[in-house]
Image (cartoon, rainbow, N blue to C red; front, side):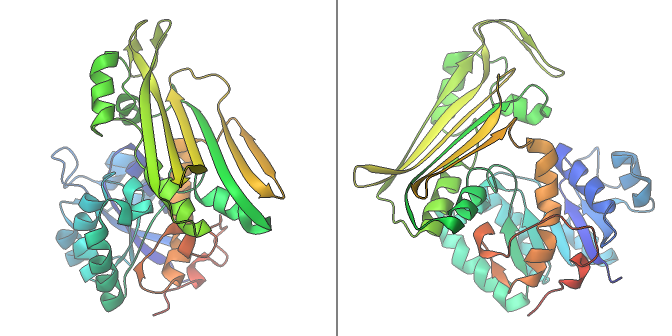
Length: 343
């Protein structure tokens, strides 16, 4: 079997888990990783991940150093939420013709935050033969790709509503920090207002669904508020006292005129009861889909990243939206590596 050569960019909690999952796939060959953090660069990948299958591989400080060793066919990128920063990080790989699958939230619909770079990077990819796509659980699946897929059986769609409730207590430390755990409500509210905290990618999910539906929105309104603890909460990483922030509640609405066409609402907080993902497609036929317990964010994010690889490499060169690709799916490895790049 011809295996796909893959390297990992970014060795935070998600990057490490993505690398470990990729290393378990029979259709993937891991050739290295990149992270310039002082406590990671130059170290053994086995030492960092605990995965014996990565023995002999070390962490490169940058992509140029990685490419001097064994150039990959594709980079798994898990390093930033900013589309602008992600595209700049990816440039050396794209110039080398190496494709990138990323968990960057803003790259789900990059025209919203970095429209000036979309044409530039799409052109670069088409010139070198590289491909780029962003994926994940949210954004990347629950509140955008999945609702779009559900409309495949619709004769008409008038409105889409998605509600996601997430219990953040078992999630990774960076996420618990991002939702304001243990902070003062007024201080965290200011961070939400200027974009320094909260859930990234909600507006991008809304814009992606609108794009897929062919709806030209007149406006997008987004509001966010901290969720305040009514009792003491302890997690592996935080001790939250009553009156302190334990999470976020955000809502984004897409309007055409005065009519709400899209409503995306997420509540992500410590010890949230009844976690769930709820999708309503208001149209013909009406669809009411509930995922009890919700899609497990961290575990499923790395799966989404690995599972999109064959579909991305089978696509034409360019900067892609997740709805541009063939439907991603889990693979046992029987045919995954056979879906090689077509230029």
